[in-house]
Image (cartoon, rainbow, N blue to C red):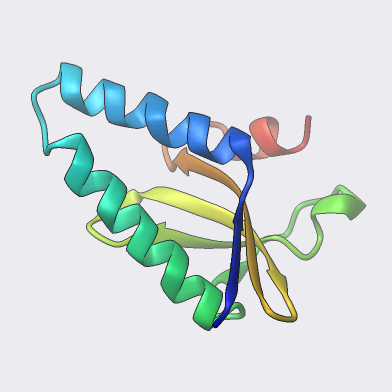
Length: 103
């Protein structure tokens, strides 16, 4: 079974976005979290599925991105591993991604 590692910061980002959706009266948070988890598991099974990002920082050169199923504006940033993936961030695509990730 593919290994899936989700960094605490990624969980915080997901929870912040779920709280925002709940405040806006949009799709239920449990459903959103379920779709995110399904997408994470799919990526773990196919680590190279995402588009490679062109970040200038050497630590981020291998980072890839993929949209959350059902919430295509939410982008998952992850590192492919030999046996799965490591989820680094889950960020809404309207945010300044380069600034957030190159800190």
